Length: 130
Image (cartoon, rainbow, N blue to C red; front, side):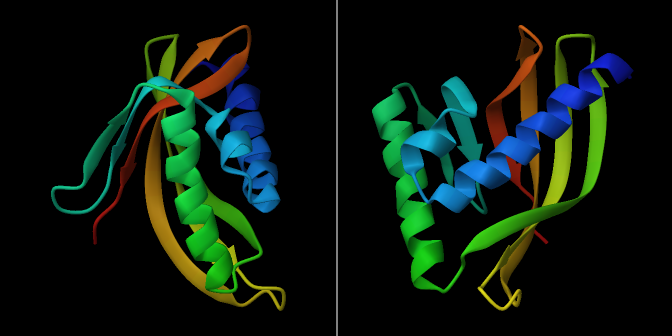
């Protein structure tokens, strides 16, 4: 484990929470490198090679979450597994909440992160299917 990189991972998720709260797909897409792979449940697997396609993908989710009453997100249960000194898998549980703090939806997800200039970017994510 590279303890010096832990602040970059925590900064990634802290900034992700702020980006999510903006409900701006472009802002969320800045947390990811290209190409980016999103693995969801079943056969759902998408690869993005352009920033505009990635921003549109995130915007569709943000719009859906907002329509369900979600106004912010929180993460918990951060677990980090290092893959050498340049990459890590960081797993969290997301909890999306409404204005009263009531959970709208929750799920665990893992992020494959790479590091450059002390900053973490995700190049792939996997939703954990229960």
